[in-house]
Image (tube, rainbow, N blue to C red; front, side, top):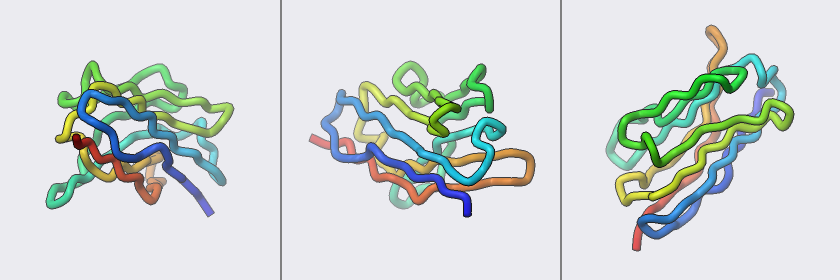
Length: 116
């Protein structure tokens, strides 16, 4: 059974940093594009960042450009999201997603709360 397990969430003050990790197993990780999504209370889930299967191309939603960095280590079957200069509006549950043609997998999510 495919597994995506997120970690690294927590409570951080505005301006702080967090690094999320998503460990993947039981599928060919290096073939999949990986993404981070987030969902704040009362809002729809939104795409935050994506990275291609070989890691050569990354895209970001405008609100996180210059603050967040997505990366992956195909040897470790792990994708990361480095989040700097965090703002209260970044508060959400962050989900890892793996996509390859019609295959689409989700993790269980990790809570990120930015508050003083």
